Amino acid sequence: MQRECKISVHEDREFVTIDVQGDLTAIAEEAMGAAYQKACDYSPEKVLLKFDGRSRINSAGIALVINLVIESQERGCKVFITGVSRHFRKIFELVGLTKYTSIVGSEEEVTAS
Amino acid sequence: MNSGAETRDVEELAEDALARRVYHLNTLYELNQEISTLRNVRDVLWTSLLNIIGVFGLRRGLIAIYREGDTRPHEFVFRGLRKNTATRWFRDLEPHLESPSSRAICVVQDAGDSPLAALLKGYQFRIWLPLEVDENMWGGIALGEKLAEMSFTADDLELLSTIAMSIQNVLSNVSLIEALNQSVLKETRIRNVFQHYAPESVVSEVLDPSNEQLLLGESQAVRRMFEEMITRLEEQHRLKQDLDLAHRVQEYLLPDAPPQIPGIQIAARSIPARGVCGDFYDFISLSPYEVGLSLADIAGKGMAAAMIATMLQSATRMCVGSYYPIPAILSILNRFMFRHTETIRYATMFYGQVNARESILTYSNAGHPPAILCRNDEIQLLEAGGSFVGIFEECTYDQETIELQPQDALVIYSDGVTDAGTTPESVGPEDEFGRERLEATVLAHAALPAGDMLDAISEEVIRHASGSKQFDDITLIVMKVE
Image (cartoon, rainbow over all chains, first blue to last red):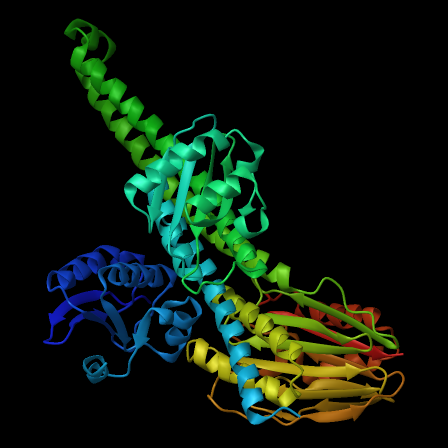
């Protein structure tokens, strides 16, 4: 059963967090676009895409992440990802996302990087 | 002997390959399900494009649908390129639309100097894949480079072709529904215009007030019936597409014929309980005189079990190809199943390798019903191994090597064979075919060649189960030493 996706944005001093609760699929496209725009309003140097650890991300969801990563790259903004299971970490690696993002274990790692 | 580090590297490569295959199969399955519920062309194109971009990790992509003879797209979606770039692309593509090359797949890296390849390259596309929807509509998918900066592989192209087939099927259905909806709307509009503009005397003549209510009521009832019918047809169509897709994937993976190994006869059969099978069997040729035999049964039934079966079969082939010892193969498959499927998903599996030159069978049994070896009218059960595949993250397995003798008969089977004749409501074992009956049947027919022995066992099982509905997949491999 697909879990509803809720996306929120929080600003920290060092970076902006896009918090994804639930499963990331095509349905979340609009919410993800709006969240990213909101994140960009802070003109961040770093964005943390934070999943809840149980999120299922299908290939349409991966496309949303790819879009975010490419746009951030064009803006000179670094993207970090946290809270993904081992399986999705592997998928991110296979589709080439890990060449352009860093998967981190905690928010402290974003600050330290 | 491999060093620990080398073994780990190989294991990681195998895991990558397996994870990629699972991701591809999941995408195929989910995309097919998702677009089957959509009712307009644009939504189908958009959802498909997102999934294609995600499954290959692409920088850009575009799908367009044309009406036959048109040079401007009827509908299109794109991602990863600006609107004016997309507009230029369609303009530059126009001269190519009449060319047969636009109706064939074009992979830029292999296409040499073809004009279409040059155009694709100019827009940083790497692939053009045509879509043949129906006699009135066609289209194409243009895909950019991968984030991983790797070329498209033969497996990618195969997946892409299967995705294109799903999109074509759905679009053909959606365009039919759109046309039907249009005709109902048209009929309603004509009626409204007639009532609005025709002189009152004509309206009264054609529709007297009492009849009008009746006619309007009838028209609405017909529309409701039509909509219900469409919903039912769509549902049926979705289910059929689901089954067709799983069938296509399974048929593609099932071996066409047993391998020819001197001195060894092999025959196999699988009878699914519902359109698709949660069991699989496979023969993996290792050398001219060596073959791997696998038979697995996935917990659960229906589409989900069938997809896992397909995944496990594919994973087994890859692991066996890397020449690991059998217990290591099962450990890798176990870890892979545990990590990449839901916790409720597990499988029982028998895997063995026959070496005809050395006359040996080496096998390991992962919680599967013991295979039956029949020798000189005696039965030996092959039980060495370990636990189910996919229940615990780390499992170790034992293997056993048996020296084969002439006229030995080996029967590997799924529990659908021994459970045949029972129903989900059965309370006792009295109805089931059972292992004792299976052993007796194997003994009775052990002198036959493998193919005849398989027929004889299958007939006995089916005869026993006649009258009861088959609720589990029935799968058998018979091997006979000459």
